Length: 153
Length: 153
Image (tube, rainbow over all chains, first blue to last red; front, side, top):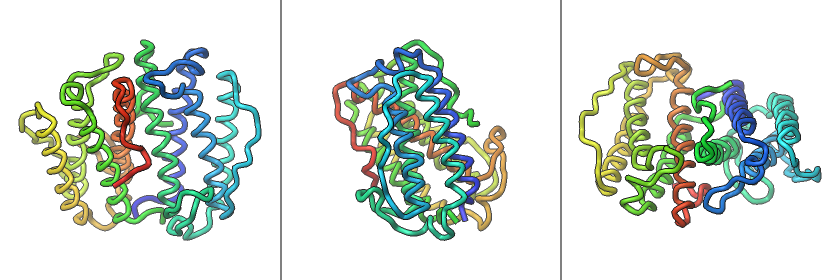
């Protein structure tokens, strides 16, 4: 065994804690507008993370894949952080409901991505780490010191 | 169980395959010189990945932590890719030698970082994903389409 489900949840939430501090480190206007090379502003990347996290976990738990979020996009940092914190609670609530043996099953997430469930969850985490790294360049280019990558809580 | 050692090795090497294609996507001069916001050029990030990967795995396998690489830094893309490919082979050679139960042990890597072995290995992978995301911004800023993040082999 490499890692227990409990340790992977802790690992993920510690990454998400760092991402939350990244969101908070952006000046409000730059969070929604600053880009480099035609890429998305950090607010849109953060909304992608939120759009993937709990919905993927719901599919892992229930074996039903639905994208049913019709709520309006946040337009302020406070609204974005509120959505972030709601997702944090939802993840903590859903995680213990993952059926035994489910990590080793292969499933098709949202009718599109077929892989073992452990790879689906690692994809969601990796995607956040990947795009958050993009946010580090945005902050540096803005002359802002980002929160340390190794600091997870 | 979340993931087997064999699946984690496959996951890591697939990430490393993407990083290799990122290195290759940079024009030679930009690989060694292009930066944004005072950050390191992508060649130095890639050398950090190489400097962490097999040396960490050696420590995981042997419980001895040594940083003994005295070889000169690569100055061309070809030399960097050669070092990359040597690390790929070394990782494949070392991985099956990880002692049973070792992932759950806590150790202090290189006299500095104390954590469970699974977190040490995830840190090495996450650090690569994180800084590789930085490389995506560099390529986009240079007007170069990076290899797709979801494409792993």
